[in-house]
Length: 203
Image (cartoon, rainbow, N blue to C red; front, side, top):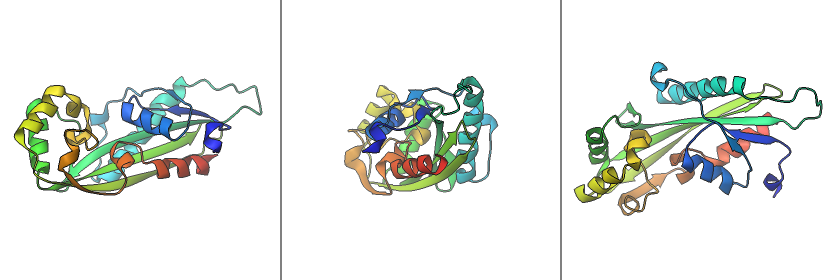
C-alpha cells in the first residue's frame, strides 16, 4: 500500500487522540500541531458551514507556524489536515458540554432518540497552496441509556471533551447504540474515505 511510503509530509492540525489513531490506522506517518483559536468567536447559521469555517480558521492559525524549506525545488509537498465537528440534535448545534449538568442533559436527550455528527476535513498543500475541504454527516440512533451509565461516563470525564457529549465507540455506550447511518470513523472525528480522497486531490 503506497500510504506507507507517501511522497509527502503530513501534519495533523488537531490534538484529538481519536483523529491521531484513525490517521495512523490509515497507514500514515505524521506530526501534530494544534491551533489555538477561539472557536466560539466563529458563528454560522448552518452546522455544515460552521465546521468548514472552523477547519479553515485552524488551518490559517497553523500555517504561519510551519516552516517549509523553500530552497529545495524538489522538496516533498507538506499537507496539513484540519478538522472540526459538531453534533446536531433537533436542528440545534451542540459543541463540547460546558458543564457536567449539560453533558448529562445531552445524553438524556439522545436516549431513545437520535443525533447527527457533522464533521469537516480540510487538506491544504502548503507548497502549492491548493486546498480542498468537505463535510460529512452521520446519523446515530440510540436505545434508552440507563442513568447509571450516564453517571459513569460523566465521572470518567471523556464526554466532557466530546462535541455534544457524544461518544459512540466507548464500551459503556456501545450497547445502547441502535444504528449508525454513515461511518464510525466520521463520528470519531475523521472520515477515512473523505480524507483519503482530499489528500489525493491536493497532491
